[in-house]
Length: 414
Image (cartoon, rainbow, N blue to C red; front, side):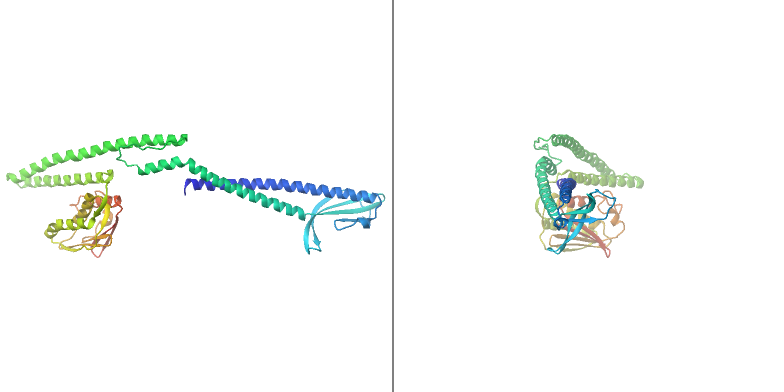
């Protein structure tokens, strides 16, 4: 969930809670004032009725729908005002309505009277309802206004932050140019941009140093390896070595070749990860596949492997041409190296897909898939599938693998 949405939700919930509490307090005060006004009205009516009785006005003329006065027997409970709500049936509306009732016993002269005064609360309830509706309408309108205002203001305030994220997203590690952040009047965002610039500059410096070290190391290692390989070749061709010395010389020569291949493989992985092969364009992958098949036909024949090729669909993809050759050649070399005696290799294409299949043993394949330096046999460097995986991830190529009926199946989906 976006930060702006989160803050808007929290802001709306907090505002709504505040409005509910404020509305409750306002309504409570309002109803208290109305209740006080109704009570004062009833007390005033009772005083008028008492005055009328004192003035010897006939009780029958004083009684009506909202006032009942009757003579009672002498009692001790006098002059105590009792106010309470009650319901009375309205003949006209054929409905019970809420009333406030005041009841008091008075001694006027030598006679005792029960005076009961009623006040309809219909208008009061209607007034409270209308006030409540008005409050809800105002509060909801104010809440919407605050939320919309908060969103619009926050969008403007967070614009420098979004610009920073956009610049970081487009930032390339190998780029010489520093990240050019937009100027902002917000102090915190300015500090953030400043710290990011310091970090990116440090990262770029470390990256350049590491890249130079990797390139220099890869280059300088090749020279002594070439000398060792040359000296071993001279020793092997000299004819002066005994069987033990010959065996040791062959071992040194093979280890030297292996080390040279590892050096080239690691250098390639480092170059892929560092973005050296970042430039890509539409490449005809089918043509590269056909050239690589032709290139490895001799190696396939020497290993007594049966090759089945069905290349019909033309596949084009945004990829570096050199890495496309590395990708295809690694699949074919992998199919040759990890095959069995008199095995099969199948290469075919379909719409935006290339299928590589080769017969082989299943042992260890799930464990070693695409892991650097993991290998299923002692002749493997353990880098081929790792290079394949790196290239596929870099250029958005989906790689699918499964093993069925003694066959390893790889599928590239462009």
